[in-house]
Image (tube, rainbow, N blue to C red; front, side):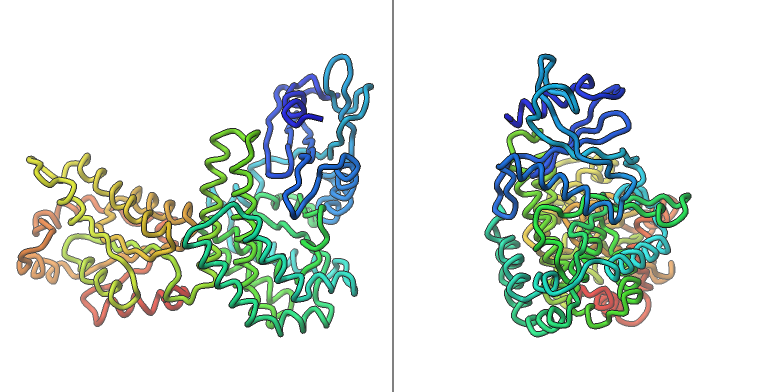
Length: 511
């Protein structure tokens, strides 16, 4: 069956034996998914990507059956069975009277808004819900299949081969990719004794294998176990499911970090290790989190090359792939070398630039100062440089320069007032899209000290004086939820403000 014809045929509402006002098509690197009315149908693409081979129709049918069997462990009411796709006089149909040319997994449709990904995106996920999910995942692991065959999947040779395959199969390159590969080898060498010891004790389990945010659905109004539904486990290769439970849990840790919620990632990890009683396993978390990020980097990179995927989706997949490799780098680098974005904001005269320079010297950051960027952009221009239009141009250019540094795994401080919460959100969103952690440092100072500083200022790129300070103070927007979650507040009138920020960065494993 030609894949393009299959996708076109199953995109018609008339292809289904039930009402479907319209059909939404979603694609991964190995599947095409059709959302039709109250149901979802998933067919496997006839691809051979090295780690998965679906070229044979019999194999595709077999793995449809496996998908249903394995996913009923965590989503028993969702996976309804396997149905034929037939080709008859009226074209392709699901469950029609013609010849069966393909097979599809039939699922009950779940609301997109209930996914953990959607809830995180809306900020609609309390810490307690993440901790409860961690306990549920730990219980699933405790009850999952075990034994010699499963334990063999956690042996060092298998773990190392899986990790190395990411680099051989990924359509990627560049300094971040090369550095992740180098650091992965170093981590494997260091962790080999622990990985082998856990496999020898039978710690590995038949896990889920793909615990992503968009595979977890939360229904807080339903009684357990229906309040948590997890779909789409790995069915096509036992070696990706037979693994140390830490390797499985690390997928959610990685995905929460990719979403810019490192606070929730830490909460999930802490709750998981408590519930699992596995303090030893925590030492494996950075390696496995990086491994999971590399998997996503590989998978999204492959999707970005598939011609049947719409161009906009390919571009989005390519961006996600690059971000995933940066997440991996951040897990494996020593803290003082991890890519990171620090925003240093506050009213004029509160010591932003002095603090930013201190971070550059003591924590290895490159500084982008908005006052200098504004003057560079305006070179030769006449008129007021502080109009809203000039301010927007300045912030956009600061963001562009920061992205250039971060793209190659660098560390950057943006020194600007960040008076408006919208600009704080903009830069924090940039960090999340790039897969790097971000910290917002809010500088405060006593107004009398500020006035004295501004009066003594000479030869500086900033044009701010006391009247500008008062104007900005009247229009200052206090940080909202996203900025507040990333914020550390510093009184720059105290002793060693830069040192206090460095200590905060150390607590965040960023210095």
